Length: 107
Image (cartoon, rainbow, N blue to C red; front, side, top):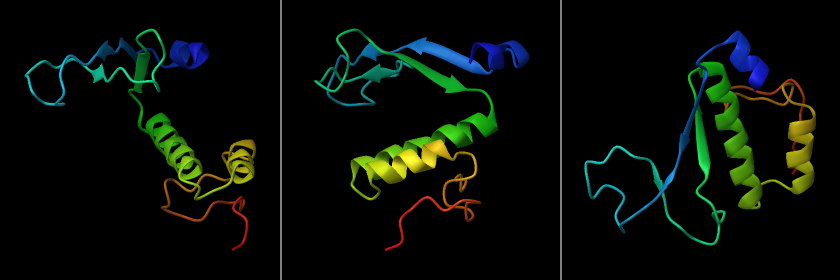
């Protein structure tokens, strides 16, 4: 990421998340980005990142989809690993087209 940022200055936007003070997500006009302090979050406030680049956002969106599919049991750990191992040939642009290399096991 350091080298990508050297070639594309400003592509990465880092910011510190803040512990959410209330119960409702939109109860104030505060533009801060908050998280709920639960057991799934680390002991220290996490740092978040967004990308000022469409291609990288697309890659990250597809990665999130695969992580969610694995968590939900829609794909196996082996399929998830196969997807990562052979990426970008396994990329389907979030379901928009067939990947060059099949990575899911046949049903």
